[in-house]
Length: 301
Image 1: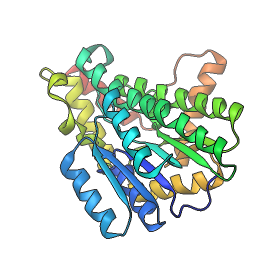
Image 2: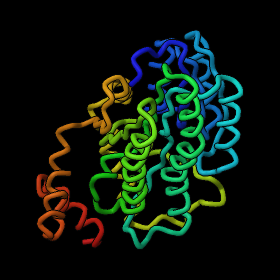
Image 3: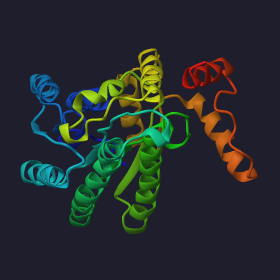
Image 4: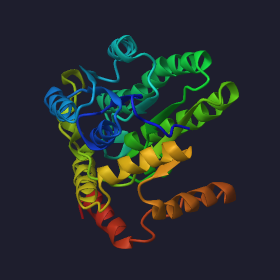
């Protein structure tokens, strides 16, 4: 586990907003070297200016994490500037909703490209670097944090493409944790599973590439976007609070990181469904009025 962050290097994707930005702020306060990546240039520029003003050594690159060549360029530049990182935060993510059969091929390519392949690229490029550093230096400690979501442990309706991407990240990270433990005691991993937190993810369509633009959104997608927007904007837990939980978890060597520990009850219900081979529990059992509202909206009644 890492307890001393000073002069250590952190790689953060999605650094222009949300958890990436807040983790960068904590990293700057702790005296870390920061490798900052984001697909939105103006947001990245603002983060860089703030971190440099705080005195942090910064390497910044505009990166679409779904693109293997761009992630390779980031990894090469990070290693050339700072050597192997000690902390990799595969955080970049986008959101999309709607009934699962209404998601277009472009929806699947965009969401899986960023949310899943972005993490895949981060893991396959930075983990070997970190393991090599660990082998060369018994004092080296490294940690990888992949951002999933409570949607990686639950399956809320009308959010299928997002759920699929985040379940994959949870699976990838649990496997990464086990695989690392086979080969090293110096490098480990955690998975961040936030619930609804105001991060800007509900506005992620702003960064959707031209080739993956959707056709006219369906009614279910508009309803999904409105519901997610409402839930995210009314969230009581801040991105800054979640970022602090991430750093605390790294120090504690904690694998699962939750923004809303109370929401784990829904995960328990899902697991009991699996264990008892019973049909999935109504996700709106605690708030039936939401289920009624969603059904009514989708059926146009």
